[in-house]
Every structure is written in C-alpha cells, then in structure tokens.
Image (cartoon, rainbow, N blue to C red; front, side, top):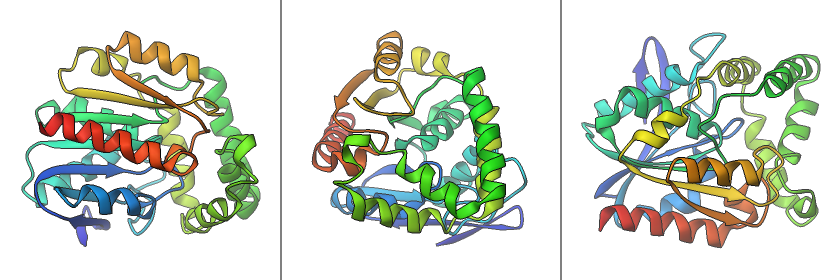
Length: 261
C-alpha cells in the first residue's frame, strides 16, 4: 500500500488481524527482509511492514533522513491505519527509528525488540566510519553495497550463506544513492536514547549476535543490563534473522506472545 506523505510515497504492507506489530528494517534493507516473520506473526496478529525513507519502495524526503524523520513516517502510517498501540520488532537502523518513535509517542508503544541494534549514539570512531562510507558509496556504489552487505555476516558464516548474501545484495542495490547517503547522515547524528530504554515501562528485548562485527556482544549485554531489558545471545553476526533464523523467529514469537498474554 502507498501513503502520500509530504509529497512523497511511503510504502507499507498490512497482513493479518489482532495485536498490531510493526516491523522496521535496517540500513540497505526493506520490508522484504521480514517475509518469513510476517507469515508467522500474521497468523494471530496484525503485522505492518514499512519501507523507511529512501529504502525499498519509499521515496527520499531529503538529503539527511534523521531517525526522527523516519519515526514520523511510521506514525503517519499507523495514524492512517487508525492503530493506537503497537509492538515494534526492529533490525539495526530500525531500532534507532523505533526508539525515536518511543521518545515522541511513548503512549503508542507496547514493546520494542532491538535485534542487532543499540540505544546508544554513534561513537566518534563510528561517525568517522559513516563519513568514509559516504565517500566510498559516492565513488563506487555497487562495490560499496557488495562489501557492506558481506561484512554484516560473521566471517565464519560468509561461505555458508553465500546464496542468502547474494539475495540481500540484490535487495540492497534497489536502495538509491541518495537514500544510502541520507540514512548514513541520519544515523551519524542520532541521539543517545539509553534513557528511553532505561526509563520506559514497555517490554524490551535485545537480540545480540555473538559475532556481530557492528555491535559488540559485551557492550550490548551491558546495555541490556543497564536498561533492565531482557536479552538473548545467539550465534552469528549482524544478520541474526538469516544466520540463526529458527532461533530468531522463535524468540520474536515468544516476545510477542509474552506481551499479548
């Protein structure tokens, strides 16, 4: 479905009936990453998948897509669907968006699962890496996307998941250059929202990859403890929903069932 928002098209899907669940993808991803989880959850819930700004079938809104900008299109979709309270299941950048949403619309959040994500802001080093990435993607778009996707997987899994990596690359290549740069700029300046995680009453779950090359396992475990959030450590890198699919699906369903109980 398409929603007109400030003169651009925002794409989303809606399937099933019941408790609303919002699925928010990560950087270089789109709603298709959730296909298996959507099928499972929509058996007993209303599942909404949203293509974030400059990703999938959603247009770019500007040259910097802040996490707040992203959160506003999520709210626009939910308002259009007349949805009040939702559970948010997120991957990577999607987690940053969900926390920005929770800061502005806390009354609409029942729970947030951060899969391979963090409430912390970028470190100085990470911001420099974002700038390097912007430069690299401007110089060679396809090479950047190929390397960026491959490096999300644990090194020990890169041969094993060659077919899946190729599929992720093909979806990532649908992301326009402006969308990539705008997201990198937005992630670079995002706010630290550890206080939102710590002080909010909604249900919280962190899914942590033991070999995540982007989010260090020990740091995320410490973050979960400080936020009094439940957390699950699963083998694999940054792409837990692929590298440990069965366990990932199982834990998401368990989290949703716990909130719905």
